[in-house]
Amino acid sequence: MSLISWLRQRLGLTPRGTAREPETYFVYIKIPGELGPIARGERFEDPIQESLDSQALGEISGGGSQLGEERSDGTLAIEFCGLDVELRDLERGRALLRTRLIELGAPEGTELHYTVGDTKLQDELVRDGWILDRPRSFLHPGFGI
Image (cartoon, rainbow, N blue to C red; front, side):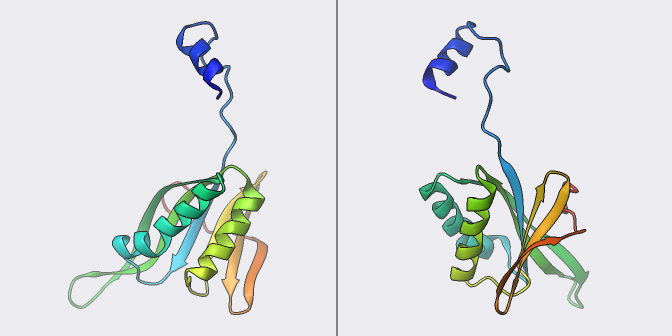
C-alpha cells in the first residue's frame, strides 16, 4: 500500500478494504530429523529470512516441531520440524528456498509444500537434488493446508 493510499484510508477518504494487499503464497518447509527450536532458528530460519529479505520475496511467519514416540526416559523424540513461509513470488521464492536449503545442509527428505490453484504439490530434496512439483497428500500439521 502506498503512503498516499494509507493516508487516505486513515483519514477516511477511502473505504476500508478497498486497498489491496499484495497476494502471498504459503509454503511449508518440512525438515526431517531431530532438530529443536533453537537449532532450527540458528541453522535454517535466520539465514533463510535474511535471504528472503535481501530479495524482498517474503517472510517466515512461523515454525514448529512434530513430536513423535515417547522414549524410555519419558522424553519425546522430534520427528521433523517445519517453517511457515509467506512468499510474494511463488516461483522465485521456491527457487531461493531450494538453493538456500542445500547451502545450509538440509537433509535428504526435506520438502517444500505449496498449492497452485487447488493442486497440492511438493518439492523434495533427494541425493541428486530436488524433485519438483510432486503431488502431495501430507497436510500442514497445524492448519490442514
